[in-house]
Length: 133
Ligand SMILES: [Zn+2]
Image (cartoon, rainbow, N blue to C red; front, side, top):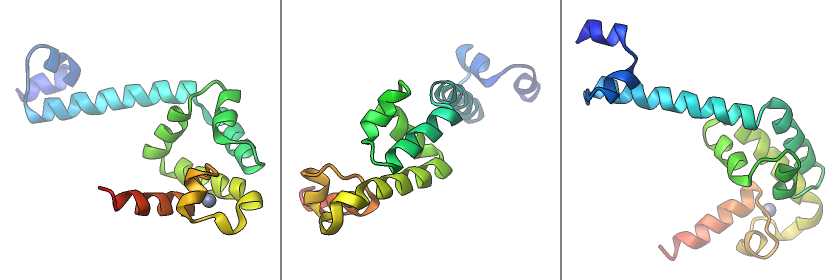
């Protein structure tokens, strides 16, 4: 078993029927690394910088994402696991909404009607929806 682990990749062992915890964990890690490689190829550093710059200067996120041919899901998906990008995206979204949201920011209506996705509006929205769960 121990030498098997050294000789073969977890994905190979899994395919051969090995369902031990280390193999399952190793397979998951390997697939995650593979998916992130794809994510990086589709939404690389230049594309990310472009989206952040556009959003900060007042372009809606969906439009900024479309400019570099990525879906909004790809953008939010990256923010789920890339802590640095998440903070940058939140800063950009805050900067995006600041000029036109004024006092509506941080209210459920800011999120719902004005489609603001800054930290405060998202917090107000999740607080509101939590009451219905
Ligand atoms: Zn807001």
